[in-house]
Image 1: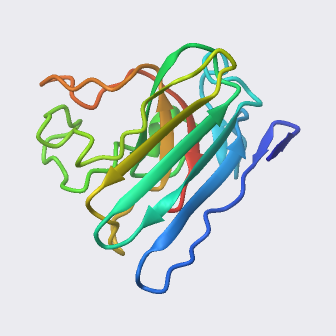
Image 2 (image 1 turned 60 degrees about the vertical axis):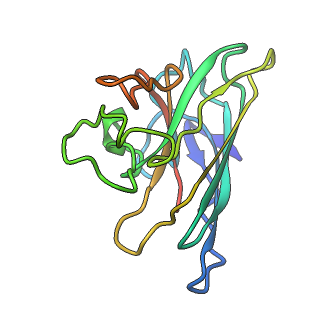
Length: 180
């Protein structure tokens, strides 16, 4: 994981799948946006340039396990994080909405029937005194060939669960492309 001249170099997602599932893996160093960057900070004050991220796990037809590890974020701070439907881009909103296994017909989705940790991949975490954090999610569904998450976004706050605010976690601070 290195960043040179502001360009984040991230290892691509790797697949070991043979139709029975595959491993999820992406790592990067957050940098300001440049074309082709895989790990982007949209708010360097809360997700500093040079902080690191690793997303790993496994998905098959019946289960998806995802792990998020970050280093170099602000210490002793709560962050929200979710799998998103589109890849990272220049603008924070480019990563699209949260990936939902069963899509809410009303967007943006704030109904806890759809915006919940069983229908989405939620990876909220709190950093320690060194700015290191870890989260893990396991959902009882996998990704089909047509619809799959394409990134993990780190948000400003832990994720809300109440009706009208379910799934909301504040501003999008950083994003890494992930091959789910």
